Image 1 (cartoon, rainbow, N blue to C red):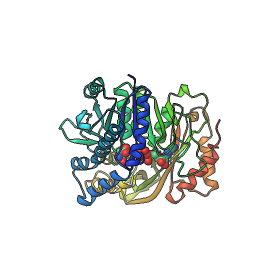
Image 2 (image 1 turned 180 degrees about the vertical axis):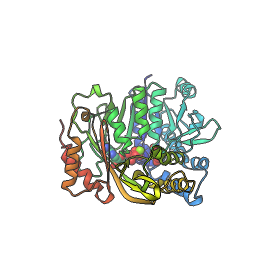
Image 3 (image 1 turned 90 degrees about the horizontal axis):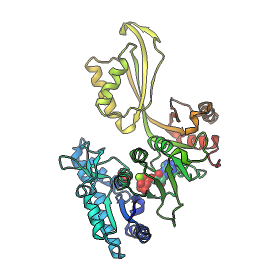
Image 4 (image 1 turned 60 degrees about the vertical axis):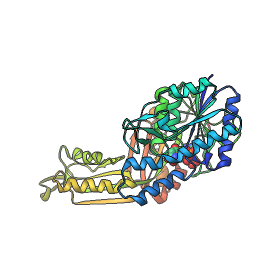
Length: 420
Ligand code: ADP
Ligand code: ASP
Ligand code: MG
C-alpha cells in the first residue's frame, strides 16, 4: 500500500477532542487506501512547560536530562492517538523514538538523524496494522540516551519518515491552512500560497517563519519529499494547503514572495578593536566554540583611526545573535579579552532588536529590491541598524517596537496581498 505521512502539531493535538479530530483525518486516509505514519507533537504548551520546569530546577542543566524531560510530551500524545484510532476501529500502534529506533547524534537538544530503520514498522504494516503513530521531536543516541531535535523538531521527524519510507507525501497539519506571504498573525493581508519552492521556504523558515522547522525543509529538499502544509481544523482534500516543491513546478512567481521576522534578536558591538589580519577569527572563533549562533556581522570601515593605546589602526565590530545567547556571547568575549586574544574598549549589548527579511527567488534576476525595501522602511521612519543580504533574501535588524510595522510595510510595498 502507498504510505502517507501525516504530522499533527501542538494545537492540533491540544486536547482529547482535537486528538479525535486528527484521528478522523487519519482514518479517512486509511479508508482511501494508505498505510499511514502519524507523527505527533506534544499537546500545545506542554513542551514550554517542560522546558520551564527544567530551567527552574537547574540553571546550567545537564542536556541529557533536559532531553529526558522535554521528550516526554510527545510520548503522551503518541499513545493517546493510537488509542483513539483503535477506538475508531483502525488498527494502530504507537512508537517512541527509541523503539523504532530513530537513531540520532548525541548533540542533546539539537540532535540530528543518523538512521531510521524501517523493519519494525514495516513488519507491523505487514501484519495488517494500518497506522504507525510515532512520537515526533525525539530520538536515541548511540549511547542509548533519549535525544531531541530542537524546537519545532516534529516537522523534521515527519519529513525524515517520509523520506525513509518513500511516502507519497508528507502532510503537515497545523493551525493555519498553509504557508502565507507572511505570518497571518501579523497582518490580515497575508495571502496563502498554493505552492512555494523549497529554496524560498528554506529561507523563510531559517529567517523565522516557524510554520516549518528549517531542518525539515532542508531534508525535504534533499530527498525530494512532497511536503504540504494544511489546516487540521478545516475540511481538507488533495488540493488543500500549500505544497512545498521544486521551483520548476511553480509557473510564475513574484520577485519577493514572502516576509519573515525573528523577534528576539540581540546586537552586540565591540568598540575599538585592533584593525589587523586575524581579528575577525579571534572574535568569532571563541563565539563559535561557545555555541553562539552568530547571524549578521558588520565591521566598521577599516583604518578608521590610529589609536595610541592599540598601537595601530582600530575599528568596531557588530554582530547579532538570538537574545537567549547574549550571556554566552558576552562570557566568550570577556574570556577572550582576559586571555589577551582580543582587545576592545567597550562591549555594548542591545537586546531590543528584531530581524525582518524579504525573500524571493526572483531577486536573483531583479535589481532594486534592497532600494525598495529601505525606502519603504524609511517612509515609516524605521531606522535600520544592520543589513545582510544573500542571493534570495535581504534582512535588516531594527528596533523591536517597529517589527510589526516593518512587516506590514514591506508586505504592502511588495504588494504581496495580490497574486501574480
Ligand atoms: P505547530 O504547533 O502545528 O507545529 P507552529 O506554531 O509551530 O505550529 O507553526 C504554525 C504558526 O506559524 C502559525 O500559527 C503562524 O502564526 C506561524 N507562521 C509564521 N510565519 C508563517 C507563514 N509565512 N505562513 C504561515 N504561518 C506562519
Ligand atoms: N513539541 C516540540 C516543540 O514544541 C516539537 C514540535 O512541536 O515540533 O518544540
Ligand atoms: Mg511547529
